[in-house]
Structures are given as C-alpha cells and as structure tokens.
Amino acid sequence: MHHARTGGAKALDEPYRSPLGHPRHKIGHYYWQALARYHRDGPPSDWALTHASAYATSHPWEDFADSFAHYLHIVDTLEMAAYFGVRLRPVLPGPEARAMAAELKFDPISAGDFTAIIDAWLKPTDVANNLKRCMGSADLCPCTLSETVIGKLGLIHALVGERRAGL
View 1 (cartoon, rainbow, N blue to C red):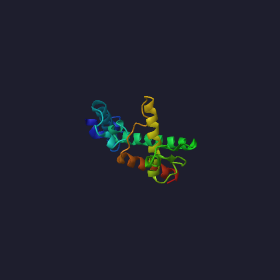
View 2 (spheres, rainbow, N blue to C red):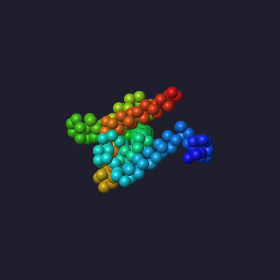
View 3 (cartoon, rainbow, N blue to C red):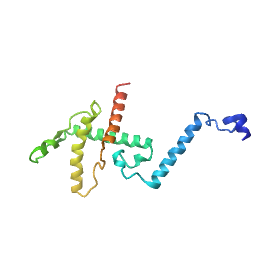
View 4 (cartoon, rainbow, N blue to C red):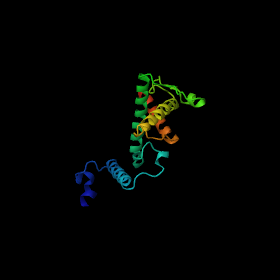
C-alpha cells in the first residue's frame, strides 16, 4: 500500500486505474455479475411485459442490443415484403377480413411514425406464424410486443431516423 499512497496508479503499474478508469472497471464487474445472475436464475417470469427477449433482462446493454436487433428484424422483413409486393387479402367474411388486409409497399426506415411500422408488422407475422404452426414449426416471430417494448422500438426508430438525417 505504500506505493498506492505515494505514487497512485502509476506506481502500481496500472495506468488505467484513474478516477475515470476505476469506475469503468467496476462497471465491468457489475455487468459480469448481472450476466452471471441471469444465467443462474433466469429471467423474471413477466419478462415479456418489458423486454424483447428473456436475455434482454440480464442487463440494460443487452436490453438495448436485443431491442435494436428486433427493430432490424422488423424493418428488414417489411422491406423484403414490400420488395415482393406482399399483400394480405383474407377471404374471411365480415370485418375480420378487412382488419387483416394489408399491402406492404412502404419504406419502413423512412416512415416517420413508428405506429405504422408496428401495424404493418403485426399482420404478416400473424399470418406467417399461423402458416408455420400448420407445419408443426416454430413461429417465425415468437415475440409478443408489449407497449413497453413497442416504446423501446420506437425510440430506436427515432435514433436511426436522426442518424439518417445527419443529426
């Protein structure tokens, strides 16, 4: 300890152990403990109310990363659906058919209103999930998008829009 009092981080040959570097080091411990706790205990039972995935509950960085990945899944899938001219025209009688009808012909990245993206996303994924279930396969999109998760995705959409605008 004599060196620590007289020479600080330099005497200990730890140049990053500075007033800024030491808290960053401690954040690494917190992150590691959060991941260890997640792998030991698993996610909370109500994780789908607030997160895009169970793993996103392990740490705020993972929450952002999984939310960002989910946003990219949505945008990429909608862009591909638009490229192929995907339209939903159910033959069900009554208002159910009108409620499920959709024509995916817009650029989701340029959409200013994230609500339009979510509205466009929910219809084809419902159809795709049901088609896959008919084949005994797992859902294309197994996520349930709560209002909280939709809010996180909307924030990411706004961040991407700002970046594209050069702000």
